[in-house]
Amino acid sequence: MGQACSSGTDGGIDFVGPVELCYFGLDEKTMLKARFLAIWACAECGGLDYTIKPIMPGDWFGGKVDKLGLSPFGYLCVVKLPDGTRITETTACLLTVGKVTGLLGQGTKDQGTSYMLACKAAEMFTDFTSKGPTMFTVQDFKGDKPKAFEDWKTNNLAPAIDQLEKLCSADGKFTSALTAGEIAVWACLHQMKGAECSVNTTPGKLATFYNRMEALPGIKKILAGQSKGYKTSDYAVPVPK
Image (cartoon, rainbow, N blue to C red; front, side, top):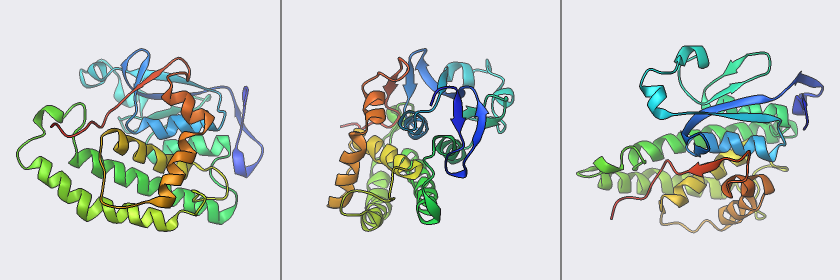
C-alpha cells in the first residue's frame, strides 16, 4: 500500500507511515506463530506498510522490557500506529490491521461474519493451547493432561469444527471476499494441523477453505520465510509419543 494506509471500508486516509507489529520472537529473525500469525497474515495479504519488532521471551519475562511502556495492558501482541498509539488484545490487533487493509468485509453481513469468526478463532486457540502442549509446556505434558486434551477434542473441538463446516460455503468461503476473520480461522486451523491435532470429522467445505487460504500469496510468503526476512516457529506442538 506504500506509505499511505487506507482506512479500508470506511474510506479516506487514516494515517501516513508504517505500522509496527510487536510479538514474541525466538531470535531476531524468527517469529512465534501463536497469536501473531493471523495478524501477520492479515498485514501481508492486505498489503500493509509495516515493520516487525520481535520481543525475546527471556527479555519479556526477565524484566528487561518495560511492558506497560510497550503495551497498554502489559502483554503482546501490540500494533503500534505511526502516531504512537499502541493497540493490544489479539482480536483488536487483528481488526485494526483489517481496518487499514480493507479486510473487515464489504457490508454489514460480511463485517459481522468476519468479527464473529475472529472472536471464535481466538476462543478456539486459547482452548487449544491451554489443553494441548506448547513448546513451553510439552516437557510437563503427562499425567492426566493427555486424556483431558483428548476429551476436549471430542467434546469441544469437534462440535466447533462442525459448526464452522456448516457456516462455510461449498467454494470454501465464509465471506464474499477475503476478511480478517477468515484469516483468523485459517491461522488457528493451521496451527492445529501442525500440532497433529485432529478430530473425528470430515470437513469437506472447511478443507476447501483451508486449501484456498494456504494458496494465498501473502500466506505462502510467510510460511516460506520470505516475509520481511522472518521465519516462523511453531508454538503449539504435537503430543509426545
